[in-house]
Image (cartoon, rainbow, N blue to C red; front, top):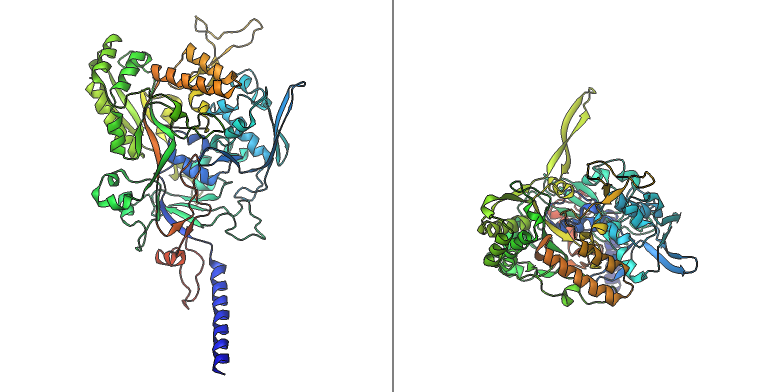
Length: 630
């Protein structure tokens, strides 16, 4: 009899536990995870994410590509469900058909092939260097040169889920799939992008196709930058569980608390504890206080090189000294790259331009860097640098110029100070010009219908404006790869592949030039540095025309060697991805362009953590959890 009573009690307990669990599950949207993921990112337009590697981390979480490159640089299907490439050489037809999976934007609108087509066309309208990735597409080069309309680009919408890409010639499909992995080709909505120039600067003007949306983009309030699960991401909202494709509910970033102080709380049980760091504060890297903690940091190569662009058109003391190759070479020789890499800790002194992770040949695991020569000495040579300046007829003490840098990137600021010291040792008067984002003031109507001004929560990124307009003397940037293929890294320095558009040709009298038929003649704009080299242009044309991959690869190595001789851009260090993951966090993935993927990430004990940090609160009876706060 006692056994029966005990069994009945256990059965009742199980039922009660079931009811309790059910009550809890109704409100359980998933984990709230505090992180220090990146330094602040003020613009989430994918095309603005190639000068600072931190931006790609956020951008890759809110937009979905046609394909994605895994951590080995191999293309994997994302939005694309099926693809087929067909050739008819007799008719000159080379077509790649893409069939998209069904998913929606975060506002419930279907993601369509029209959105993908728009991303292709936008590269040409925006005169973006990534447009060189598309030169095999029918009419692409004519469009880039101003001889055709972007409407004639060989990217055709067949129906809502089918896109056809037509090529000028036979292509290597696997190589082109790497192109389709580029974040520059994330599908976008033209009704969003074309109607608001600041669409990517505020959460309520964006829609997302990726696993997360930007719930809040507030840099001034604690926990003010919030990424939230995109409930439409590949999901049937009437049938599928909330977490079928994305496990965490929210990822929360605090930009008001010093990141070093946040690191002190890492993985602990105090309120406000972050469980993941994608950027380790510079002050902590060499501090003995964090030595044991940072021994667990995961470090890997990033697809970017920290680089200095020299504006060859800038007048320094009334003279375009950066147009002289000897001056550019001298400035490079003066830099102590080993010292900079040591100061940054998570970096490697650059001995070339193309970063680690870039492929030597599409479809192979070998890195380009493994087969490349070391073109740059990583230690300085001031005597040789001074000899080059003397050869160029430049007395350094006569010239003053500034290094423009983004104020929100502490690694860039620290590097700029070290480079400034090196160039000052040559005799130049060098300053560091740290440009801060400026909040946009908007005009709205008050209750009486009168205009009033107020902060918008959106920011003008003065650094990016200077970079894209060419308004700099020297500028520091992370030169982020637009594709795993090293061609995408080297080609933009050639005039025809710069992606910088075209301008009307001017004759010797300063008047527009016309051809024999009375048509306005256009000339291609060079790389943003102003670098123009007939021999380098010819080399990249050879690469573009090469059908044999071995020949193509050899030509790319020759191209890098030419660039490192001419030095239009000065490589400083190869960047590293870093991550510090708490023991409570699991299933953090990785990909080629960013160092972390959080779609399936789990946080153990997240209900307890949510209660502690007041992301959720208990009912009066203290039995269940209610609607999340905020």
